[in-house]
Image 1 (cartoon, protein in one colour):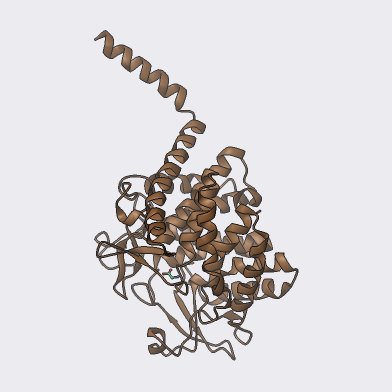
Image 2 (cartoon, rainbow, N blue to C red):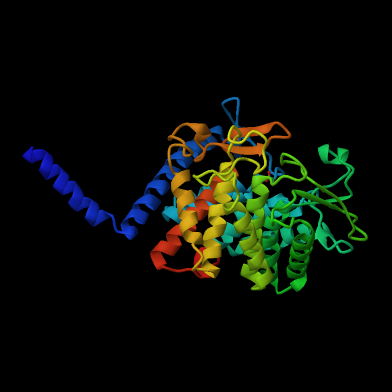
Length: 410
Ligand code: GLY
């Protein structure tokens, strides 16, 4: 009995000593970094042993799926290397981050889809920020030029997808713009910062304004696809591609919008973008179909809720966005919500055991149910936004710093 009491007493003492918020946060962050390092060590050992540069995106039939550099997801794994380098400070990750990033060099000329912002932003822009790779500037600016070729002045938007080929060519669209495109604007804002050429900034602002006008419903949820007449700007269709229905709220689209408008506020300080981000937040977090653990179903209007797949990538992107939004609006509880999402994503319900899950960190994301692709799988971008959120949380906890510089900037 005495022994038990001693143990209980000692545990209580330890609990008191260790349960200050600071040390609990530190332990949480440290444990997640260790987990990411363990998974990434296995993943990069496989790549390095292959003698090739491989770019893991997800798993299919138990095997890791590697993608070519034109794939919209090709920047995330290099980005995960930069984030791991930044989180650990371990030089081991630097040459890997450099090698996987520099493999994407020719993406700077890619003009046939809009995702160059994701691809070059997560890879080269992070290298520029975290390792002061000055030589990456030219790639970032060239990629912004390529993205700018997709700007349609008559409609005031950057065209997301070409409409004359692939499955997009079957939809009758002229100039499809998807809410995801908000994520590509950071590259343009940064290109203006790097060059002093305001053309990129102006395109980003015009795109954000046109999207704000046409892509949102009265309840502040967004359509996935708006099809414009590129000459007149007339809205031809309000559609979905990856959501349940044209009038439904595809979960990742809401996360892209929240993150995208928060970034627009970062560079412009225009309050209407901050308001939009808050409105999207209110839509998500007041939604009756958002589960208690804050990891949404793949579509807020999916027909068989609660028997529908969750989308962890949406939750991870939302958490990262909320840490930044909290920097601009510190009294609205956004950090608390982001912390809650992070704790849930780090639980065994969503975080894989080391050596499983194709060596990705998080389980249970959805690519596109209408395309019957990537349902309930790991996705490299879920890991990317999770690690970015972890970095932002660490910077906030360590420095008690909410300014933009502590979150993302060089
Ligand atoms: N940007 C494509 C997707 O979110 O699935």
